[in-house]
Length: 73
View (tube, rainbow, N blue to C red):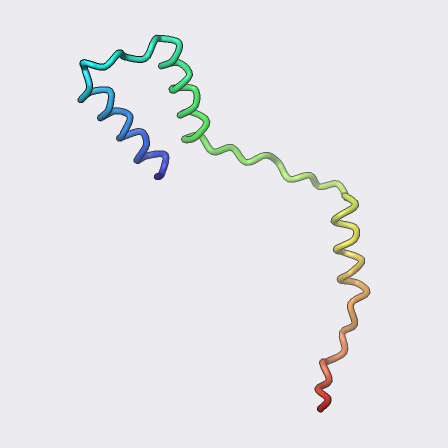
């Protein structure tokens, strides 16, 4: 289920079930806050500094033999 589908489902659930106990104002606030985190996509900045894993990958690429494969039978 996509975030948009969930929002439509939640809206329909709230509108079509008036006999059920409605969420409290605190619960609605929690739902709204959660939906904001789902709909607002924030990508954290990628660190430009070197990391041990990145160093290993770069070393492996540098040291990788560039010779063509040899097939032996």
